[in-house]
Length: 95
Image 1 (cartoon, rainbow, N blue to C red):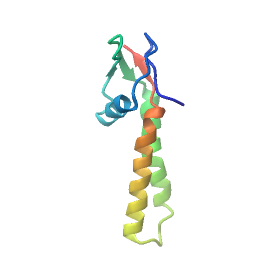
Image 2 (image 1 turned 90 degrees about the horizontal axis):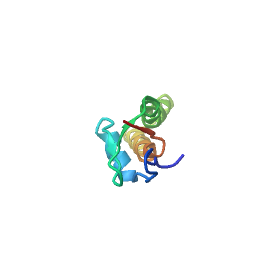
Image 3 (image 1 turned 90 degrees about the vertical axis):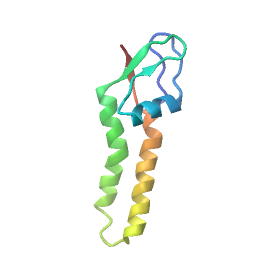
Image 4 (image 1 turned 180 degrees about the vertical axis):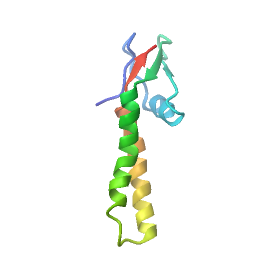
């Protein structure tokens, strides 16, 4: 687990680059050093989706007797946490 590096030159991508790519429908990333274009792997797409929405689904099945506002707040927190840690699990391959 760690941030991805360029396949060509070994330059480490920034968290913000990976997050932006993730949030804009897995937009390819260009290395700032050697200008190599990297595309997200299919398995990373699945992992990112699971990290973002699986905790929400698990939590949703256990909130039968809680108030709606409390449940919404916890759900928002879980989705936010998943979005924050997803860039550490994203893997890209050079084109």
